[in-house]
Image (cartoon, rainbow, N blue to C red; front, side, top):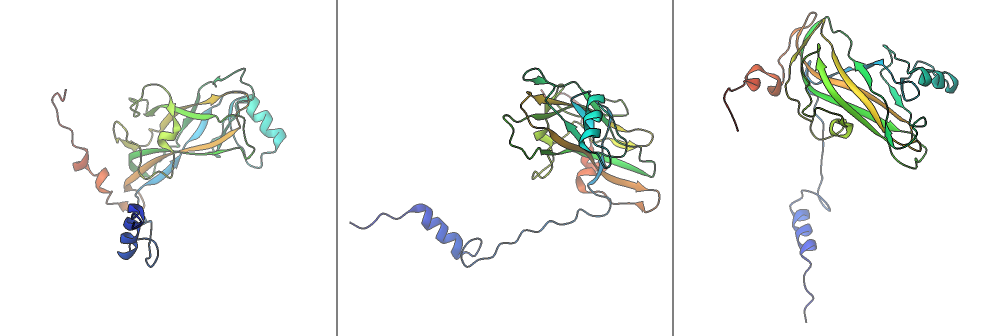
Length: 232
C-alpha cells in the first residue's frame, strides 16, 4: 500500500515553495520608527512607597542602603525603577498600595494613548512568582482611565506586546496636570523580588521648541469623535 501523505509536510512544502518562510526563502521583520513626537514614553516615579514592601532604587544603591530604603518605603523623583519585596508578608497576600506619578511636562501639550509596565524578576529562582498589580490611572485627579475599577495584573500592560491595551479615554496632558497610578504587589514570602518601572505613552501635539507635530491617526481629533445615545 502506498504510504499516506502527511498533510503537515505537504502544507509546509507549499509554504517553502512560495518562498514565504523556510528552506529556500527569506523572511524579514523590521520595526519602523513611529515618527516625530509619536509614542514617546514619560516615566512614572514613586511618590508614596510601602515600608518593607515597595520602594524606589537610588543611584549607587548598595544592599545595606537598599534594605534601609525598603524598610522606609523610600520614594524617589529621579530614579524610575522600583522594587517589590515579598519577604515581609506573613502569607500569600497583597502588599500595601504605592502611588506613582509622572513629572510635569511644561514644554508640550500631549495626548495620552497608552500605559506600559516593564518588569524584571530576581535572577534567583523563586519558590513562587509574585505579581505587579495596577489600578486607578488618573490625569489631574480625573476619572479612572482603566476599564477595571480595582487592581488588575500588570501583564495586561506589559511592554513588548504586539499592541497596546486600550484605555477608556485618550485625554490631553498639559502642565500643571500629571498622571498618577496605584501599584501593589501580590505574592507570598517565598516570592522573588520584582523590579519594575511604569511609563505613560503619549503623542506630542505641540512642542514649545519644535512646533506642532502631526500625530498618528489614532491620536487625531477625528479618531476620537464620540456619538451620543444608548448602545444597550
